[in-house]
Length: 308
Image 1: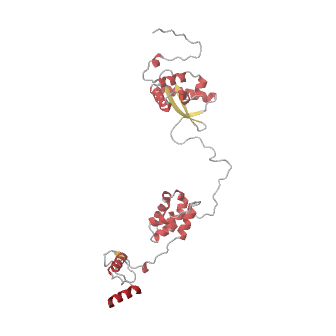
Image 2 (image 1 turned 120 degrees about the horizontal axis):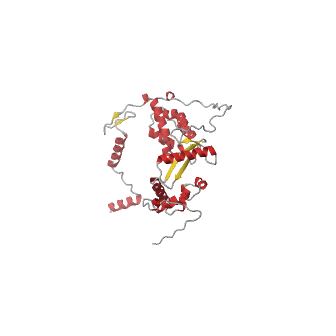
Image 3 (image 1 turned 45 degrees about the vertical axis):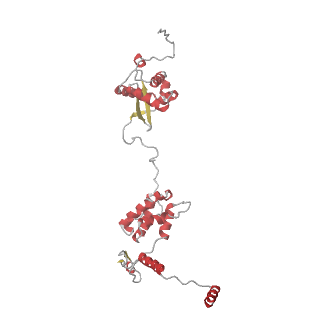
């Protein structure tokens, strides 16, 4: 193999021989490195690694693999800095020789300190990004000389559990109202709306209605359009509120004479509804059939045949 090399007078990039013969770098990683080193200082600051990898074949997977290879080789370093305006900027450093983390951080610090003093278009830096909330004051949080607005609406305060029939019913009612969104997303309520409707729902539970029955009463037969879920639920809770049952007017459960199951008798009954229905059906089956009615022609024919 013959070699004849002529050094170009301009527009060329020097690459170390160790990188040319580095088998750990793929063709995409080597090409990405050469593209980055071929940029001028000003253009390098305005170009991202993603833009350099736009023309590489293989798509995003190949590009990410090339980045990881360059990072492991110490040729590509990335850091994040927060400027004085609170914006976080990601900066990449590409080198033609491997650098360790300490050397890369020193170069980053020198670059950001220089751009902060010179003001050459780069974002002024306020130091490395740290964990926790930003120390930069957010715009619009407080204005001097402006009196904060006070809510003067005549809405009553949200009810407390003591206003309902009991703390247990109040808690259960809140849970039912919060879970209505699972049955229909149009019945999604806010926390304040739930607190306002909970006493009405708790009254249903206090009157012997189960949670499942209350959920069914609030979610069944909804209109096609629900403009205000809170108003619709309030109308149903108030309009369909079941009557309170006086415990003294309800008979105590007694065992059935037929099946020994407990039931509440009415007018001195001794058997439950299932046993009474079964007995009535059995009586109807065992009863003799009614005699079939014979028309007069058939009767005359039968009498004539008997007389002959």
